[in-house]
Length: 171
Image (cartoon, one colour):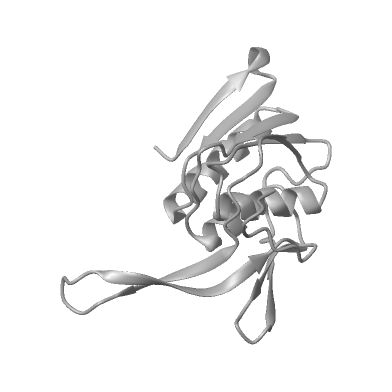
């Protein structure tokens, strides 16, 4: 499973391990966080260690659980044009009284870094761990005709809400 959750400290702390960023994982993550909030937990730990990333749409959905509005990330194309990706309304844990810690490491890449960058720049979470991988590009999968495979094409770079490009340096 891409989402595993448990209660810590006698049920007062919610812990969610996220190992991928598929659309299905975003839905499961949303449910896990909503259950923690419904149970009255005011301290949450999100574990992104070893998470290589996935869909940017899932990263937006996951970060939106903690940010009521505003920028999640920027996408910059080859011409230098910027497109802002905003938080989706309705996140379960947007209340500032809910304390949030993200666990990251060198295996936290791409969509994991989008979430970490958004929550750090927006001062919504404390990051704990080691420097992340540093993949700041957006790729698009293109299927070739028949069953002959496909290819990933880098189509843009992404920037944190403060417009920092973390490619090659990490967070």
